[in-house]
Length: 348
Image (cartoon, rainbow, N blue to C red; front, top):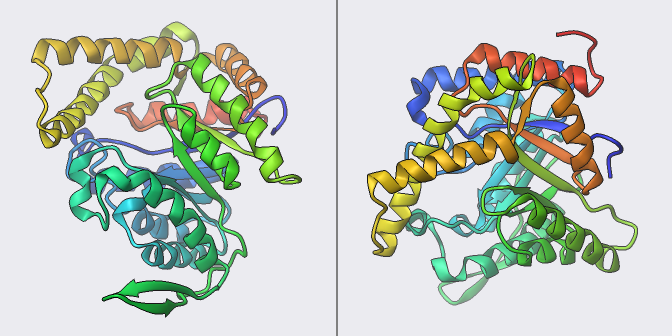
């Protein structure tokens, strides 16, 4: 555990609908530089394909490389690499380059994937994605440690050692867990950290899964420390009323865009899509849920208390999702206020 308040990092996951791509990448660069100046521990970059929601991020390693040459201290993490879509050797090569460019600041979370349409890129089947992801953990660690790993090619074993050699001896590795306890347990057994959120989990379920992860971790990894990163929609304003009013419109639009991504998954699976009325009702519910119940949204007092509550439930790090349509100045002020709350600076 990290003490009375979790570490703070920044999470990106914007839609291409929020503005021209060049402007949005510039926003990521500027926000990352500011986050480093304010003492945030890391930035997280997602992987998303074939849809406007998250469409700025088809390859987190490419963007992390750009951030590496603009920063000096802040950790650069994938949240997440969809492991079944990539050969483990390619993941090792890409992120070793990020590690070299950043002088040892790379880290990544592996996700199983959930959208069948993404698997046009995949090496395996959608149905085998969990087993593929968990196997990638072991293979990636071996490659990162400079071991030679054998892969089959046309029925014959081919030994591979990847290059370049990473700067860091150990790769900080998370598993992304967004639903039931099974992935938390797998992360514990494999000695991985956990990246989670309230996407498909209520706060009580997340707290229970975190407890189970920590309880399971120690027997498998005595002496090592488990680590839980929680992604949260974030906005810190002068007071709670101002924060809620600020996020209302952007949050509703963001959730509506997310439901469009769900439509794509339903079409791929051959299932019936939601009606427009159903989508709007779900978007309103989700926007309210994240703003009022599952977000890090409020004034300094509310956010400070919320961070203390999260630390007590076993959260080591809060990854603050800030690019869900908020104006740039609101994001900037939010990061300054969070830095003040965490004791890193003394004034906004």
